Each structure stands twice: as structure tokens, then as C-alpha cells.
Length: 325
Image (tube, rainbow, N blue to C red; front, side, top):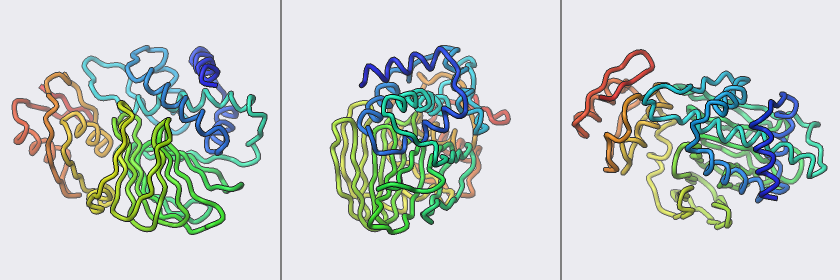
């Protein structure tokens, strides 16, 4: 099956796909059938495409996110953070593997799938068909059916969102991403699964959830205040107690960084403030930093504080662009 998915990807990147195929694929993606094969294909494609700089791929990414009104930055000298581009690269795979729908011989066109994209610099609160409330963070894409049918309520997330799940013991609620799934009956939890981030996280606020990580399917049962982290590069996962207030700080507009590098901080700032960084990423090492910023802090104020702590660099802001020197 994995070789079959590879063939599909190659076929997609050399041809265009219409909106009907894209819509049908979303239904297939959120269905539980062949979930393992889908996850494997997403993970393998992400690993292979992450470092790609082919312009024809960039054109594909523009088409994939065009419907959602997403601007995927094209190549520009020394543009050293491309989270939207990487997220869209995963979306390319998502559309391409829809063709496997023919293989499964199952039709999903009866139930329309809704695409909810939240642009950088924005957040959005939505209600799903089952009355589950979802708070979606900046730069995130959520796919969900117009109505939940079958034995589960499954949605697909690229990005970050908080879920307050409407209780329904007969129809578990599942959040799927490329290499992690979270299953709940009625509870509140946070999932962070940005395509460009090294780690994925699932944090439980109330109730109980089951988290399955990676291709090997290692699973955890979380209690309130616990978080599972999964490293997409090493395949390692871990369970830890965390400060729930930190995990949900983004919902209040706050920024909390715990033991992260400058590059990781820049990726978050890029989404929150809808900015792009230019310069050289080699300027910064892998030193880890801790920061906390209130919801009132502007981008310039955040950069001034980071500069005072990290030192040895200057910056200038021109519109939505930040140049590191």
C-alpha cells in the first residue's frame, strides 16, 4: 500500500486536481478505514518533501490552498522560515492520496466536508455539527464533515486547536493529524500539530483521552494536566505533567515559550503576527530560552525583548517582513 501511495503522489505533482476530487478526498481522509496506511503515507511524504525547493511544487501548493485564500510565500532570497509552505506540502499529499478512494471502493460524496482555514494573525471559535466547540489557532486547517455519520466523529487537523467535545458515548470523537490521533468521548483537550514543527503535542484539560503516536501506534491514556509529546523526526514520544495555563495561553492571546530555540520562537511569531523572517538561520545556535509575553505585546516589543536576551543581532520591520541582520 505504501508504494501505491508513492505512485499517487508522483501522479498528483505532475498533474492538476479538480475541486470535486479534493472534496471527496477530505471525506476519505477523515474516515477511519485504512487509517494506518494514511498516517504512514502522510509521515513518509512529510519526511521526503520537507527540504524540497522545487518551484513546481510551490505552484502546486498555491493551487491547493487557493480555495482557502491562503498566501503561500514563494521563494525569496534568505527566507529562512516557511511554515505555511510546509503545511501546504502536507496538504498536497492529502489531496493526492484521495485517488486511493478508487482502491477502497467506498463512496463519501454523500456527506460534504467543510474546510476551515484560520490565517496567520487570527484565531476563530467554531461549533461543529455535534455542538463540539473548537477554538482554532493561527495558521491552522481543520477538516470536518457537514454532519457526523458512522461509528465515530472524526476531524483532521493541521495546526493547533482546543476542543470542548460534546459527550456522546456511542460515537467517540477523534482528532487526526499526520502522525497522531486523539480519541475522546466528552472532554476538553488541546492538540498542537503544525506541519513545520518538530514536535506534536496533545494536552488534556478535563476528562480522559487516548493518544496514539507514530507509525508504530504507541498509545497513552491521559489524565487532566498531562501532555503527550511526539517527535516526528526521531519517532520518540513522552508523557509529562504540564501547566495547563501555559498550554492554553494562546487562546488568551498570550505567548509562552519554554526551553525553545530562536528558530522555534520565530515560527510561532510568524503565525501569530502574520510576519515573515528574512536573513540567515545559521546566525542562531540551538540554545534554549524561556519567554512569556502578554496579549498586549506588539511584535516589535516582543522582538526587542528577545534581542536584549539573545543579543548579537539586529532587526528591522518593514510591513509584514522582518529582516534579521
